[in-house]
Amino acid sequence: MRYQFIYDDRLGIRLPELPYRWEEYTADEQSLILLEWEEIRSAIPDRIIQLEDQINRKQAQLSDEDDFPTACQLVNDIHDLASIINDLNIWFRIQQDVDTKIHA
Image 1 (tube, rainbow, N blue to C red):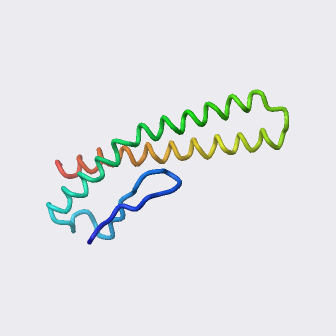
Image 2 (tube, rainbow, N blue to C red):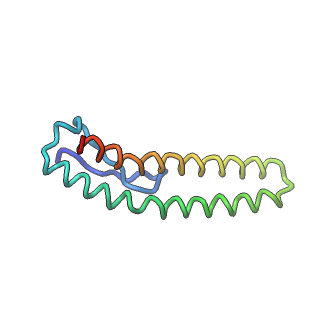
Image 3 (cartoon, rainbow, N blue to C red):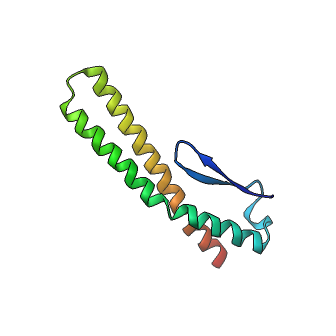
């Protein structure tokens, strides 16, 4: 197969592994890739909601935390979760960019 989708543990979704430039894929391959990506992409908002819930719980813990090292760890955890959300938002927008290129 000339492409595949590989699970990313950090993001919690499968990501495309496309070794060729987009233009080198046939129209059928592009359609299959986009179809599979759209299924994955549609789950991103739910994944972001899960991560936001985790952030909210950690922020609540942080507001009650008196131990400085534990508070620092909570801040780091919140930062890491926010970074994942940022990356998921970037991946979510990729479909729009590809659609624009295809229809241009």
